[in-house]
Image (cartoon, rainbow, N blue to C red; front, side):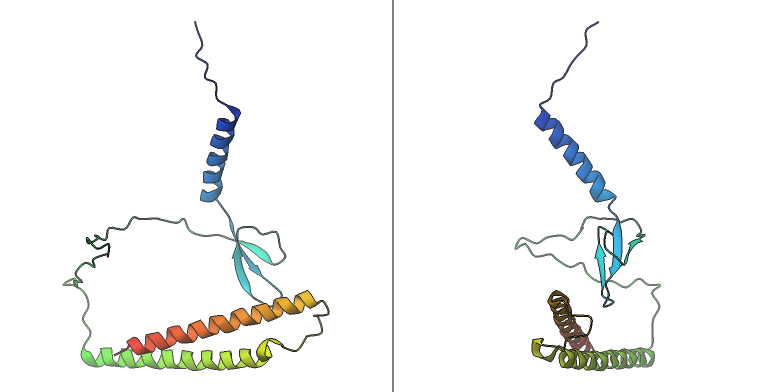
Length: 169
């Protein structure tokens, strides 16, 4: 009885092993929620720093898009249709809901504008006062960078709230 022996180059075997491990690692990667000393939350794929806890997430489901594409490359939107058994709301109730939504958005906008004003005051044009625990200049720079990110995020939130308010009837 003869044996069939296949020979593969070491490079091929290494490439095959790495690609299999990459797929397994990608499919089963862990997620950690890390909170730093300033209370800033960050999601990471490693939990090797202080303040990190593993997060259990549901499995991810990926579906392909079924939107038809026109000749020019743009995606055509399917015609919107309401099912016959979809609940109907009278105009008065809908108007009340719209007014409640507008009020909630305006309240959120006011809070976010106040938060931005406080952040900018503390930021002091990029030179906030040093705190007692910031004898190390790198800690101070980290806090200044974090403050700048918070200001940017707050400005984006204000823009989004203004867009939502402008979309209301």
